[in-house]
Image 1 (cartoon, rainbow, N blue to C red):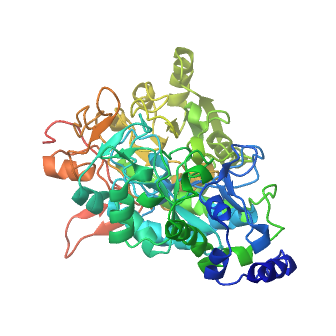
Image 2: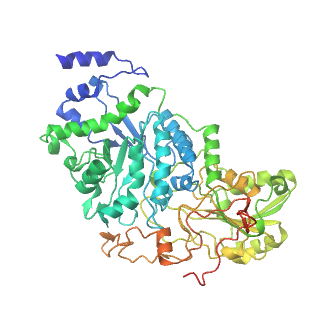
Image 3: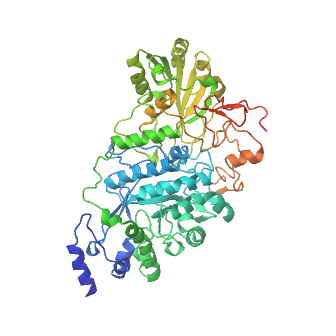
Length: 589
C-alpha cells in the first residue's frame, strides 16, 4: 500500500523547479533490487549528447541524471560553439588566486546548469609529477599539493553553487597517460597522503558531490577496485561520504565492497547478474552515497525543462570572465631592460613583426584535447587581434609562420624593419598520450631572427613545462599556458600594460629534458608498461631542485610584474618589470 500511495504522489508532482521529494530513506526503502542496481551503472553517449547518464525512476520521481565533460568547459562536439572554452585548470593554477578559481568554477557551473547537466566531470586536481603528462593542462594543482589544495576549494564551491555536482578527478596517482590502463603506480601510504591526496582532501572538505577513480592500478590493484585507497584512505581517513564513479571503462569487477559505487558507462560488472544477491546493506549504502549529494545540494528541485543540451550558453559575460582569468594567469618570465609593457597608445603606432604559426587563425591553440576539449564558436587569434590594435592607429603588421626555410628568409627580411618582433610559440597535449618532449612548435629559428630585431618578446602557450633554448636571445618571455577563447585579447592586454601579468609558475621550467633525472623505472615505467615506481617519494618538481642543489631555468612560483620594488632602508631595487630571467646553465649545481 505504501508503494502505491508514493507512486500516485510522484505522478502528481510537477516537473519544474517546484519538484519536492520525500526523505531519502523513504526513496531507498521503496526501490526494488533492480532499481537500486540501476543507480550503480550508467550509459555513455559519446558525442551524440551528454557524456553519460543515469536513468531515473519515474514512479518515484527521480529524474534522469546527465553527466558531461569537462574541466575546461562544457564539451559539446556535436554542437560546437554553444559553450565557452575557459582557461584550463593549469592556467587557473598559474593565477595563485583563490577568488579566480571560484569565479572560474561559478562560470563553468552556470553553463553546465543551463545545458541541462547535473554533474560536471571536473575539476581535475592530480599533482604534476611528470612534466610530460598529457593531462597536466587539466589539473588545478600544478606540481604542488598545497597550491591545489588552496585552489580546489573555491572551484568546487563555485561549481556547486549552481545546484550541480562537481566531480574530483582522477583518484588517484594518475600522473601519466602512457600505458594508463595497465600501469601500476607503486607508491607508499605516506607519500600518497603528503603529496597526492591534499587537493582531494580539500575537495572533500568543500563538500564535493562525486569523485572519479582512475584508469591506473595502485600498488598492482585497480584504482577503481582498490580497497586500500578507496576504503581505508578515502572513506576512513579522509572522511569522504558521497559516491565514487569509475572513469569511462575503468571498472574491472563489481567492486561495491571495495569502495566503488558506480560503473561508467555500461554494466559489464555492476549488473544484476553480479549484484542481485549482494548484501542489501551494501547496495543501500552505495545508492545512498549516490543520491545524497543531489539531495544535499537541491539538484533535483533546481532542474528545469528549459535547461537542455541544445542551448547556446556562452555569453559575453563568460567570455569576459575567461579573459580576466587569462590575464591573471599570464606569467612574465623575463623582461630584459623593462621592454614591456609597450604602452597601449604607443603600440598602436608600432611596426610589428609577428612570427610563428601559433599566431595564425588555423594554428592558434587555446586548450588541450580529449575530454577537456571545448570547440569555440569563434576564436580570436593573435595575428588578428594585433592587427585590430595596430592598423587603426597608424602602425603596421607583417607576419611569417617561421616553419620552413622560405619562412625564415621572409622573417629575416621583416625583423630589422619593425619596431618589435613578437614570437608566438606553442605546444599542445591531450588525453590518451603523453607529450613526446618539452619542445615548442616553431622555435628552431627564434634565436637567428631575434638577433635581427630591435626589441623581441616571445609568447608561449603550453599544457605544462617547456624548454627555452633561445631564452637569452629575446628581451621578454610571457606564458599564458592554455588561455581559453579570450587568450589572444588577454595577451595583448598584458603586452601593452592594460593588464599586469599576475601569474606565477605552477610548475618548474627546466633547461633540458628529464632534468630531474627520473629513471625509466620511475617514468615511463617498466619495459612491459605495467610498473611505475614512485621511489622519489615527494622529491619531484621544485622539491627535487631544492634538495639536489640544481637551479632550473625558472623556478616554481616565478613571475615578474611591471612594478619596481624597494626592499627595506635603501636596499637594492628589485625590478618586478626589470627582471632578466634565468641565466646560463654553467655553475647551476
